[in-house]
Length: 112
Image: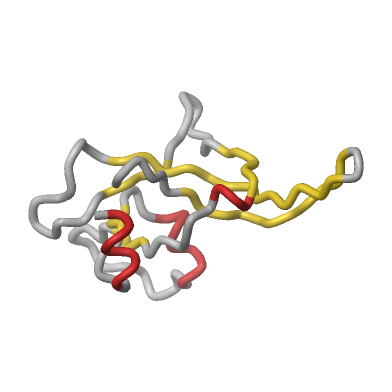
């Protein structure tokens, strides 16, 4: 993915220190699965990055380090998805995601 990483923004905030305002984001990180894109789809696969206790890796980053939004598609598997699952649960329920290079022209040219 050309040295780019995937993170989920949990919140935006800012703080001032010595008269300088720092706009930041709290993020959860994803890590690549494998060294190459998926053979069948041509898209990279990522999974939530967790520590030895199963907690998500979390960081505070400066908003200037965010390049653009990434469109993630869950790797659904073979089972049906329960009807009570809402769209806002999707990044917490699946084990892996495709980084959708077909979302738009810019996503394709930047990441591939």
